[in-house]
Length: 113
Length: 115
Image 1 (tube, rainbow over the protein chains, first blue to last red):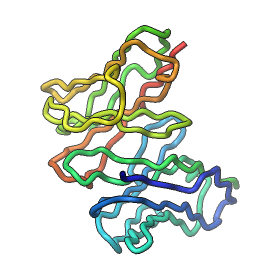
Image 2: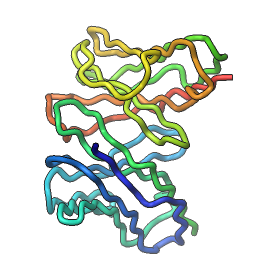
Image 3: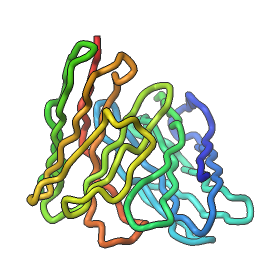
């Protein structure tokens, strides 16, 4: 079945460091891929998405490219801020109508000043 | 525009009891999905309702059920609570015109503790 594997955390960085959170997937068909972020005490918010191979999603300085050849959707940011501290989830969209997402286990990012 | 509202925010129950959680989607959204979030299993899909019909269901026992009302508000019910049901239950809404790449809007969740 479909699945998502993302790197385990926690990831601890200093402000302005480069961030990469790896995400790989297994899926049939051509699923959509997402990154969601969860700040402490809140629900998840969509950070970015890509709907087909080679698409690049971007938002708030974060980027991720849908790589079908490596079945990956790694999240990157060139210079992290303390306010980026949160839990990041990679997710795979279903192939049928409906909105059942398959989430990775989440990666906790902690950025210190 | 108001976001997704989940009530209550916190809930404490004992084993064997039942519980009902409520979710009000964003106005105009017709799809409501429920997810269970635990430290060990992460986020797992429970079910999705669209226009009062269950359209999709995850791999959870029948003790977990839900429904959606004509105003798109949704409730989920867990009967005969077990310790392992302790989790953050998240509700998400979307316009759900049938596309699979729609953005989900999540509520802040209901934190259920079973003692």
